[in-house]
Length: 245
Length: 245
DNA sequence: CGAATGATTGACGAATATCAAGCTGCGTGG
DNA sequence: CCACGCAGCTTGATATTCGTCAATCATTCG
Image (cartoon, rainbow over all chains, first blue to last red):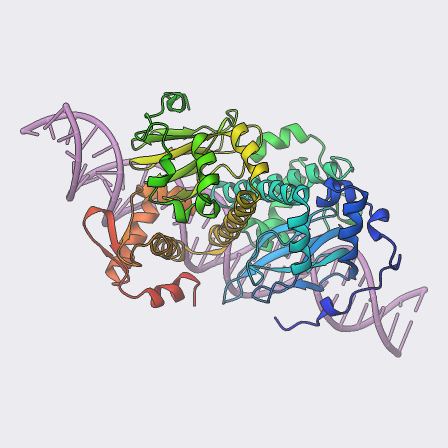
């Protein structure tokens, strides 16, 4: 995984030394939510804004974990590789999501921009110092970890016990509710990632993903719109299908 | 999942009002590790010791999350069910493991004793108060959550991308290293859970688990001993097989 | 000793992977 | 502006792994 080192070439903060967090559009969905003006200022001091184009790497598994991130816009995929190239995507991050809870001295997984992404980058040692000083932030991080763990358990059920059709439907529904949580609509859902990404997230092949989408289209369970949007005409019906009812 | 309500019938603390943690054999492997004498005393005040026989439930998914637990001995399985009965075991807990990080108001999964289990039970509101008073404990909990998340990601790779043989070998190796971490040997490994439990943990059927064990025996990769012990003659060789090298 | 429960093995089937061939949409350059 | 080429997506034919169904064996516990 030799990559251009983007981490050392951040985009200049457009607000200069003023508090960039003040203009942040995802603040109240991110870990920063719990911070007051003063605390936010302290966080802003160790933050750097970055922009990445699609396919650019954010972190590489095994590298020294020097930075933590907050996604401010766009979509990031997290993945792990087996030696022979098999890939498992362990999650997708959207605006407001934090990247860096599950790590030791080195990153336990790789991350890459799916589409155009903006990030807020923190130096890890500085972030950890701040963490000790701001117990609110630590509590919030624990709660974020707890949420991620719940999601991970749901994903294990999906990977271990669901059929291809149930996997695809569950995936679309989770995109739908996350989209709503970020202030959007439940439907149509935006699908910025490729079929190959979806396959590697759901433990399938691209062919099976494609065939299953076609099947769902034929059955009128979904409608594929322009711009990678998917319409979910009957979400309650889909919820039943997702669990094999 | 109607069950006898064991939570309201705890075994009496054999040490009475004295600090029961003082005698705890897994203290330095558990979250209590970071606490000093005084802090330990405060934790002990909200703790109750319990004993469960094999197959007795610890918590049920969906119930109000009134308690958190620390496993002090034995094995506990965590699982989620789909409406039609398909089951995914999301993890096994051993002595020193904490149960209750991933939860909201209600439990997100069920837990059941695999063999004879002893637990340390905490009332949740009291535990949360203590958490605010003991920042060390909170940091430790965050680190435990982080470790669980790393494990969960590895399990996603296993469930989504590994073959039956790789799954079984990976499982045996993880048991081996956890056994070592608790002060035991790398081999032989103790397998207290049934074939059905292993299957539901690895996203397989009991038949496939059984066949794969037989295959590994035939190939001399493992040896089944008495008392549910499995000998791993060449751990380095197994590590390669586990990742498909 | 016999019943029950769990483990193993076998025969067969089904879901999904693999291999291969078009198709679609889009950016590029003539 | 259109043709080309490329990457990603779709579809089809076939292969394979693992699941299902069923019988036997092993072990434990009354």
